[in-house]
Image (cartoon, rainbow, N blue to C red; front, side, top):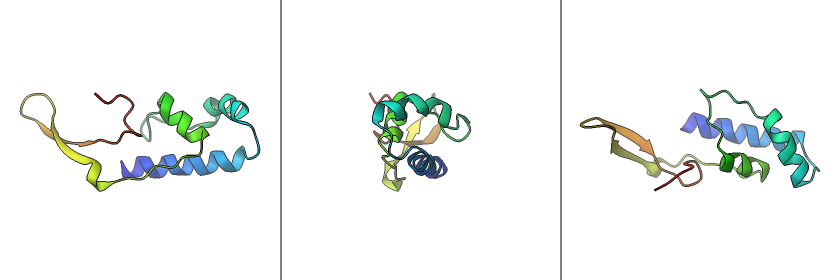
Length: 89
């Protein structure tokens, strides 16, 4: 998650520098051709793309890590953050 947030913040900076002075609608139109869609680095969601257009950064918070159960009897770490998790139940 720390690498993902670093990558996201770099994309925010790169997008802001490359599209400075454009209005929001034009920036949204150029977004899909701009972003790096490498799924090993980040999984772009609709909401995360909107945050990028707004130039809103993200921070890795160690307190957002929790242990969870994945299938019966398998513990693993889960990162729970409303900005970075698209669907929260």
